[in-house]
Image (cartoon, rainbow, N blue to C red):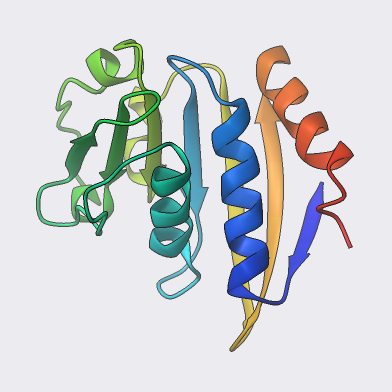
Length: 153
């Protein structure tokens, strides 16, 4: 499923809808080049979960945790390129929280079998293409909710 995004407002709408339907132990992968909008999406998603604190990229910490409607773990694995270090990822994935991972390709060996993958492709200044790829039945249902909510152009 592809969603054409031509404004920050639409990015926010997708993030808010996703935040409404996620449940405990859900894992969301955000992939895309630098500047694609991964951290912006993460900020909108966290705020929609009810996080009150400022959400910024955890590039230097790798993992930041927040309190909201559901606990929220925000990972940025960019600094783990060429590393095989397990930072206890499984504990985060099974902690009754939602985990959102930027640069997930750098920890692919530690990812759970099922997750929702969102690939963000930079097209131009205010234009992105979101590809939603579910891995597992639960995530197929989440994709259908996004599909049914008229988010697709």
